[in-house]
Length: 224
Image (cartoon, rainbow, N blue to C red; front, side, top):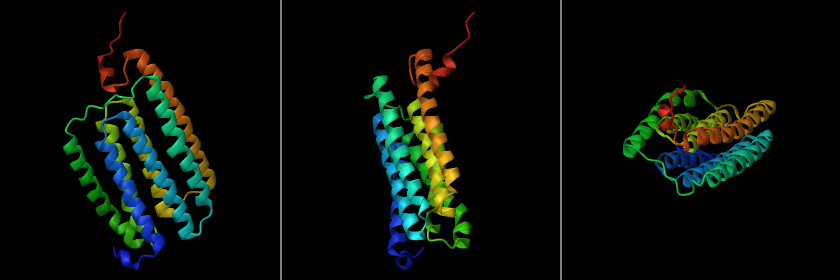
């Protein structure tokens, strides 16, 4: 990819996509729950900014609305809700136990390389200005899945789930310049409902095992 041939807006989109990918690795490397939530908030803000820039570059005004919804939900509401739950459960100093963190980061790098290899034929066929970031959106989904698998705290797994949704939304923006507005509003409502449901689950998990470490769920046994 020759960056010199891209317009200024396209170069900015590629740069923001690289920052979004960097936040995915930052999420994998973070151990403190509060730092994970803050990093996710920054990722949401970057996704919203990239969506607005794609809307400007492609003259798609409906993407401005999508950017505002993403900013409100991913960068403000969901992080605020997670922060409130962390504060409620007194987890401000809680840290995730990272097992083989170096191996996880190396695996994340391998997933990025795999994403670029898989997306290369798609990018060659695509004619849109956002084709260089299709691989980044795929890598974002895979890194979110990796975080969901390798983390044991419920808060971290929720962030991993939301990071996957960020990648799927970013893929829609990169490949098709956004979904129809009614679909985007429905997806945003689903995210809002999911965030509230996750909060309810946190209370039930804490009441059941006195911890938000889901690895302890296998210790539960039925008693007569």
